[in-house]
Length: 214
Ligand code: GRF
Image (cartoon, rainbow, N blue to C red; front, side):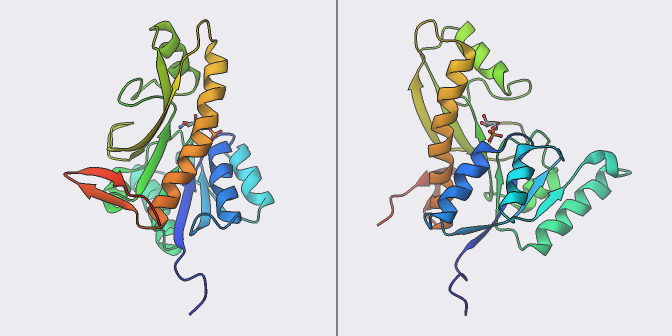
């Protein structure tokens, strides 16, 4: 048996710069997370996430609807890839496309997403990128932050597993707030992935709870 046999097989989905993906990968490289990123899936061939994956020797899979005749073929090709790499945890890190419902059902409690607000506030359709931070400031929220949640069939709706809260500063710009929330994301997401890989996420009444490690 290889020394690495206990590593959880992770598939990362990312469309953008991939800074959350990098923060998780960094912790894996440091030996902090008992997981292995088997592949990075992206709809965006020019994404920073894919560039980083290539530079780190992580296999990539460009998956874009335009290349398929219909929804079913799109789903099948992704599903085939996930089986091929023996995926155990799907990590959505700034992935701008909806995961097909069949995959959400198959990977129930094994898909996580990060969102730059304190869900359920400022989640759902239209709330992505700077839209989130602009709305937080416009509505005069006192706090914002990052949320990690399990994925169900509705955008940003699944059970929340962890949140990081920060105070919104007086007269803060959406850009500054976004940057500060991102710093929180980079701490929070690796912690949740680590807990998952150590089997430390328990479910009680359909609510995920992270239990402390030794
Ligand atoms: C993050 O703000 C994340 O919360 C959201 O998409 C953004 C991705 O950023 N889902 P990055 O590509 O990880 O830098």
